Structures are given as C-alpha cells and as structure tokens.
Image (cartoon, rainbow, N blue to C red; front, side, top):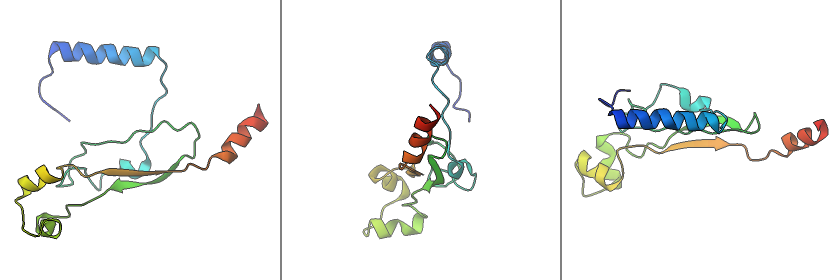
Length: 121
C-alpha cells in the first residue's frame, strides 16, 4: 500500500516506535485466517483492505477463524433500503461510513487451557 511520500520526521517516528516495541518485547499479534482471505476488502467497493484486526492470543486456540466484514452497503442500488428518500453514494458515506466494519469471533471459554497450564506447572 502506498500513501505517497513520508516525511523524514514521520519516518524517524516510525523507526523509534519499532525500536520501542522491540525493547518492550511485545509479543507479535496474529491476524485470524478468516480475515487473511483476499475475497473481500473493507471499503465499499470491497477491493481494498484499509482495516485490520490483530489479536495476541495467549492460548493457541483462541481463534475460531470466523470473521469478515458487515456489508451494510451491498451496492449502490441497496442504499434506498437504508435511506428510503435516497442518497448519493458520497452522502451515504457521510451518514454511515466508507469502510465496512470487521468482525471476529474469539473463543472465550479457555478453562481447559488454564487447567493444562496448572497441571504442567
């Protein structure tokens, strides 16, 4: 993804941030497999991936690998379903968004993993 030229100040800030993250030993996050697919984007045209969800699972099976986008737009012809008086696409994006919300399902019942940790300790 290219957002144009980056100033020297921004580049220096990004390098400093990367060093701080490395020094803090923050574990790497993971993207659920369901959100890695290239079948959808998070913009209204569904061809760009502007939004991401990262998760740092302490327990390996936290991910259900279910996730995706909530497509409230579908296409321009469906705008009238949400706004019966009708709206141009640009005005529609001002009322809702030009990004589709991402969703992710995470397993929260992790007692089995916790018991295994206790037993192995």
